[in-house]
Length: 239
Image (cartoon, rainbow, N blue to C red; front, side, top):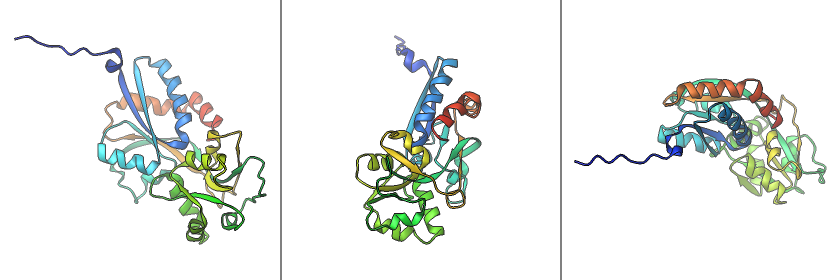
């Protein structure tokens, strides 16, 4: 009988590394991936961007992929099933801050109570999609402000990029967002930092998935991101 050998293109023949990455870190990880690929020309790196919780749900359902980088380490807490995760490496820090239009025309102060100002249109995130929503609730709950702030918000967004873009487009005066979210619109928004005791720094844990089919490459990418070249890029993006 005739044996048909399927044609495999060069692209299909490449080894594939799949990274699930929270939106706010995705530009930095894409830059790190480009550098890493220079050392591994036969490697195809696929970066799936989204809210950290949405990505977690995808990982949990599909059991496919190699690495996961959420906006904060809630994935290792008891709230989520952490049987999906092997070892992690810390590649930076994420911190929540207030974000306003460039020039701060409404004179917003570094104070969470600003989220209740009646003269401000506010934009927030809820915890059902991304890490920024989880941190928003965690920070505001400590000061009994969460329910009031959510009720006052005009828009609810899913991730750091959409929060930044809402301020950039003039849809809101103020949001609570990752400081590094400024990278999506550096000329149009500015960050008003909050004190560390109000908004603790969150480690960014690049985590290998337990079912990774590219364990060696995944570990090499983890070390590269945590190493000198990776850290230069992370710092450039504010992590």
